[in-house]
Image (cartoon, rainbow, N blue to C red; front, side):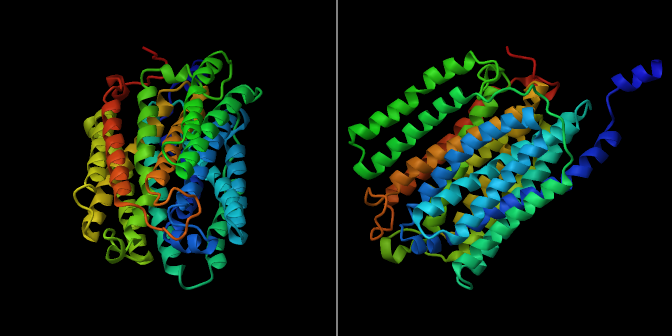
Length: 491
């Protein structure tokens, strides 16, 4: 009896936990490699896709905006379903949806069809939070849970960002070599392979929360808020900043957040757990995720279009081709991976709180360097590299910090919420940046393909300010995160 009690209460050692973790981590790494390939593949193809669909380069931002908007909604829904339906099952659903979207892009004949496929591919944003929740669940009961989870998260995030290089290189190399539909079929095949790997490689798991009806009321209010806000952004883009209708839609979208928060606080199983966000160690993590999503995701497409803009034609830009764009993406991705892999060591040396704050400020420095140094391709690579080092460490840290600050039956939700706020920041940024980079105020003006330089200055300033503010927000994390679990502390 005593032996049984001892085995039931003694925390498992790393030698007991690591084999369980290693068994699944390889399959999870594969899905992150596919995720990274999907993220990197389309960047060098922006101009080719825009020409094929008959749209301007700036209009491609609307694909990103729509995808990030749908990603927000899907992460909210599927992260919660991961707790109540099982993490493997929901991961399988999302890989299937992503594969379906990728195949639609192969045969898309128009802007609207391509938009549908691109939006469905937003489901891949759910993969990382579900995977980190799987890792956190696998290490449950170990006194080294947070350390092992940080290390596993660093591996997963590094695999994701490093594989972006492969996607960017393949996309850039094939851009002019083979027909566009053939090029677009490569990510579709990869997404299908990820579905097969999840099906056969990941073990089934038991739900950690009671199966209840989804909070459709909360989801409806959230969709109404996002829809109204984005409709206002589109109206501003088309009608200009003096449009009363546009600003009315924006204000309505923001105002809906008030009844949404009140409604959610009364629900036993809300789509957004407002009470969870009141935990002292939780809300700075989520707010920082929003700000870094705005800074990192928002800058992706503007930087790519700036790279390709010919200074001899419009007076600014770097005038480089798809090959150098791939190099630029690769350089930032390598630095992001280095930052993600180095964060566990930084956390051991400085403490998790100091390490993540330092990383946030490093990323802000890189984003801010675009303002004085944007005329040289070499300096552009330096800017991207410094930003990547900080962003990689921040993105590796935040999901684990969110999981450690959540109750056991909310880890999937907490990590999913971090992905939600990151994509929400990216959604808002891409919508706003699509407007400030618009040369004509029209969604389909092809003749005026080039954005005003002032738009790029606005993008760089906003991204630097958001990353800097994230660092100050993370300073508000309790010091206890370096010593003990904080999930039960709401002070």
